[in-house]
Image 1 (spheres, rainbow, N blue to C red):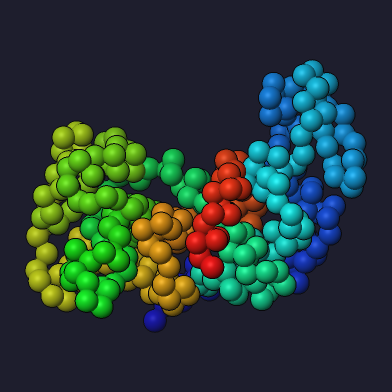
Image 2 (spheres, rainbow, N blue to C red):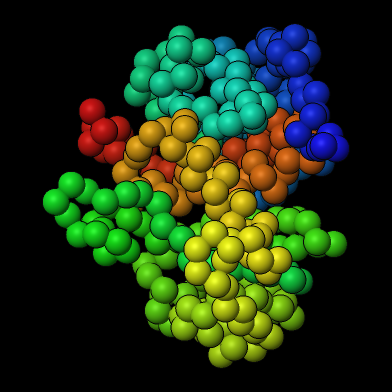
Length: 318
């Protein structure tokens, strides 16, 4: 069997990572580059000149035009975080360089922090990925299918009606017979009304959409897309036909990754984040070393989730 060059990447070793990001100064320099690659810009007025100073060991920039003061992390996903930058960077390294996902419990042990802090950190990183991916529609030759996360509760409803199942659309952008990019988007169901918002945001105009016979996917025709329907045979043979072979492989890998790492989570609440993490990593799989600066940029550009919202979620988990 031929070696897959993407799977066999060396990535960034822990030794090389520590050489680049082990000190506070190195972390601050990397964050500055991620947030202001063209130099400082005031978040209020976009002025380019500021006075830099320290206050209680915190580095601040005071805009010379509007006098607004800001820090490296203010207004980002790191906003008001009490964790050391080195902890953030190590978490980003572990999340991006591991072959499979990493759970909050593993982050807790690796970083030497509380479970609550690790859970919060993990969800902040996943939400930054979700925000980054939300504005990246697929284009060209796109194969789509309906899928579900979760299993049946003992004594509960069976099949697709189970209270523990969360519906999502799996879509893959094909290029030269190989999967190029994917999207895994939670939806309220597979009716026209539920799929209309998904199709409007996840698919770029001019694309050709291939689906099975699910009637809800005909919504793409109403939006002006070319739509090809392929009726797959039942059983295993249906997963191996050319139209959906790669899509079924990706859905299988997704479910194996999530179940093997997390075992279970509250699908209805957190599906968007967990799906976005798998999607984000797959769509940037060709260069593992670049994943660290790219995720740093996503964290710097993501809108912070209100602290009270995350705190309430943590309390519900404990």
